[in-house]
Length: 229
Length: 242
Image (tube, rainbow over all chains, first blue to last red; front, side):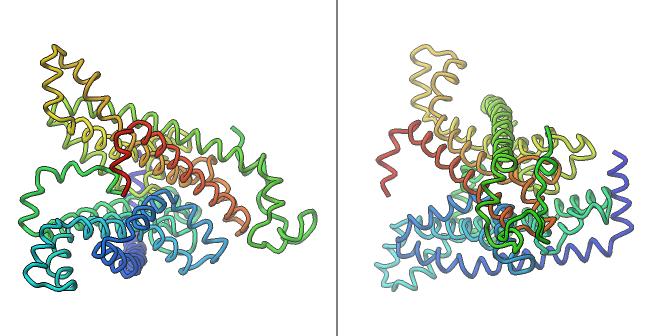
């Protein structure tokens, strides 16, 4: 237990280092989430809108879920070498599947009656997408973003072995920082992941239209776990 | 348990000497080196990885099933257990392994405790969902036939929850295979061990061999459990056509 006491002492003595690594960690994670969003959302939403490519969307998720993150980074080390590009590619490869699948499933699963009613009111395809499908699909789309973002923050820790920087730099470098430093880094990154999860859960609630929230409340707690990964 | 790093010198001799030219130039993949190190490095690492995974998923399943049965009886248990396992699930794996080191040391126990904690949320939620989705009519006909509450649980509800439980097992197994590579930070076992060994010298062949083996193991396990899932739910075949 003394090690933990020392870890807190390390935190007190190295506030600046930990803050700097946390900022690095968030910048790396944010960039990876941003790139993944730009790839996954338009593709997923479009496939869902035209109700095509379920095979691709579902299988990307299954394969993506099965990819061990360290293995992806390892292969990246051989192909791309150490550095930012490798880390970015690895994080994007891991973040795209949950975003893509949720976006597809969300738009594809919008009540057909609502879509047909919109069409009957004279809305054209883009209007149906923007005014009906997207608002109704938003909570589930956001659930995918939340899963991916928390996953990226956790995996960015591993990225330190490929020169990604961030809090992993401290955790994998016991030679420089000692066990107290490693433990302090581990605690900070844990707190970061938990806070991110909490904040994104609140945002997800905020973007959920009130009507859907009321209708879903009893079942939200029991989403099948498979959707979470 | 001999360490992998000790049994197979993994730092290739870049200066020449005994190693072949492919290894010397650190080309993308040297098949000769891989096949000559299969039995000393990769096959043991693969076996260790599978054993680590089976133990973690096995223990996780026992704990989650027990917790789900309790929560099925006493509803108030569900929320605290979900919050607790969700908390564990959110901790980055590398951090959790390291945080356990001062308590349980650089041991397989440390690795297994961390791996088990990542299975709980998935297995518990799938089991409790499976149990609660059993239609009330089915439960009531069982009661009408004179089943006791225990008989209803073990002869009606649990069998009907099996597909959901297997679906959870599939996700949990793939997750554990992924995280077991990270366990090599604290124990010299599993497919993560050659990856960390390769980091010493940026040895491409070893990076790719261990990475591809880990991915292949995850995909094979996923496919196997998908097969089990389909055998266990023959009635779902028609609904899956899309």
